[in-house]
Image (cartoon, rainbow, N blue to C red; front, side):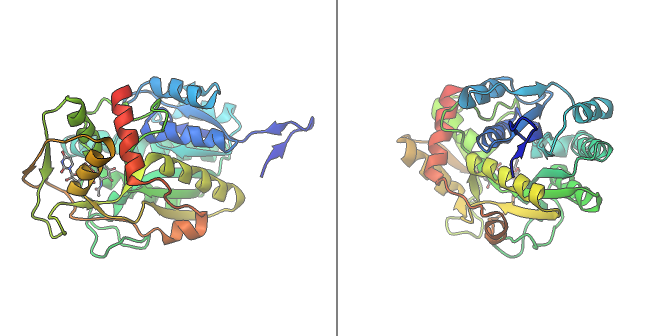
Length: 339
Ligand code: UD1
């Protein structure tokens, strides 16, 4: 619901977006503005670029307020929370490389868990009630039953990265806040303007960025990690969700918390399982390109298949994926050419 001040001027609700200069964060900032919120970004740019903030400003025509701060710094975060009168927080700021988390788990525990601790403390201190948390389908580990529902059990995490997501969800459950954990499946694609996207310095190790790097000539070929899984074409199955659809789910989740107290978990996926070979073919067909690939051994820790049951989020938030795999593949290619 809108708030009006004494001169009858619409007061837009302020939302802190930690990690708002990142891949999913920047797309969410665009959607928050479109929905009438005033997002305020906190980002230390440790794994993204100011290019995304400039991109958001170009897309929306609005100047974005942002703080270059580390979310594990209690004093600084608390200061921002006490100065800005905010309605809620969307907490994206976290490390996200599964591989790196295996090599350096402490870095992941310190940053991913430490930053949520600081955010929750600052919320309590400043009487901020609402938080949306960036979770992941990785919390389900290797599921026994597909598609996964929000009630599917948390199996043993496949990586320290996955473990941090499980722990953070647990922290939200015992805190006094209102919270929504959004369990993302595999986010792909970019805004249609190609002005924002994944600017992370990590070596690309997700499927679609690797495909686009092959397409542009940065890599000679992509290795498909195993074709001997128990799936129709033998390659792993995932649920690839367009990042713009994903971004929109955060706005709906924030409205849910603003209007009603509670704690919720939602799967954010399409419900459609796509194999690695299907994804390569979809990219080739959409962009009229040929991708050089070969079959290699399985990747350690890979889950055979996972895709979402989206009934709950449709019922409670009225959210479902709208963009197609083809739109995602087209925008992923546009971003690679433009970045
Ligand atoms: C995993 C996590 C996800 C997390 C993401 C961050 C699960 C189920 N998902 O995604 O929560 O946010 O890491 O990085 O734990 N592939 C190839 N060749 C390649 C690269 C990938 O065949 O060069 C295949 C993989 O084996 C997999 C699929 O492509 O089957 C997708 O891989 P990727 O994009 O890395 O994402 P996940 O591992 O599913």
